[in-house]
Length: 214
Image (cartoon, rainbow, N blue to C red; front, side, top):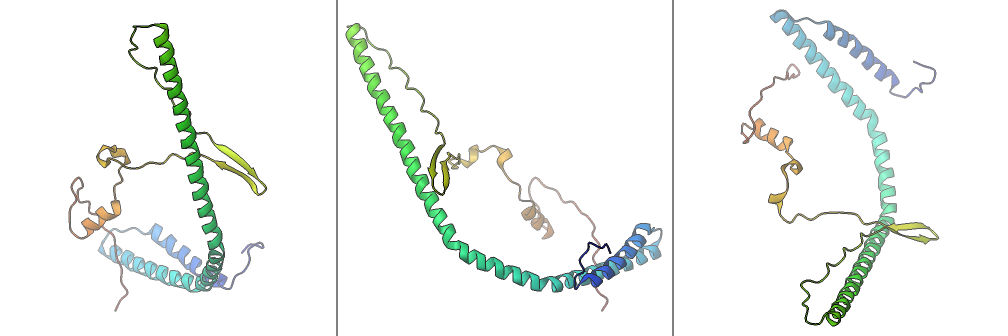
């Protein structure tokens, strides 16, 4: 063990588990199965390995439980303390976002109105200048400017309102297939229960399972 390694109450148990595991790893990697007796010996070793893995995991949980309990208590305390701050943040984000959206929409509506008035004035000028000539079509309205980020400086810091593109599904059947998600867990559950799913086929794999001798 290096000089920089800090000994823990569980260090000796961890070292013992690691040493036994390294021994079994060497044996398992060198093992050659050439007959039924070899196969029986390998499965016996596999059962021993899995039993040891369960014991090691149980020991890990036992050692870790006090730390987890303390961590959960810390998380709960800070989560409770942060709750009103998060509620305040949510309220302010919603209100500033709604105000900014209404402001942008009002500015765009005002721009459209100014353009409408200008088109009306231009139409009147054209009519006066060319009496008897019909105006086939009105000028195309200019496109609205894209929303830009606006920043407000406050004593607590700068707050920038940024347009974030989102989406609403209006016609699911029009969504391209590459945006669909295949639920592999759900499909696997169907096959484990003996069923079939269209577009899939059964794929058998063999996994050894062990149990403690009675």
